[in-house]
Length: 114
Image (cartoon, rainbow, N blue to C red; front, side, top):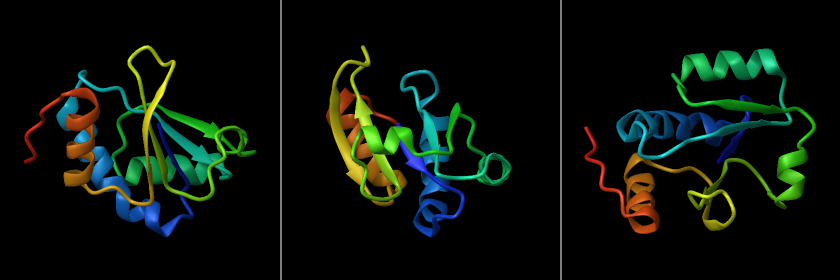
């Protein structure tokens, strides 16, 4: 679960890597973006521009960020396959390499980068 916003410069840097790894992972990993404290139209443009093909939840009031005590964006949670446990977090921008390494470490999934 990746919390981001269209106005976040670091999120802009991170988005291509998350989009790429999401496409490479296919159905082996489920990605969810949470657009946080943002305008829906801006978020939709951002998702289209960065080719985010995974589901996006819109949280204009920052309820998810508040619930999980997120100090800033981007912030990524790695959640168990049952959805009941947080296995890890990443604060700040992910690169494709770092995201692939985390997926391998936490879930045992090996994905070849292109």
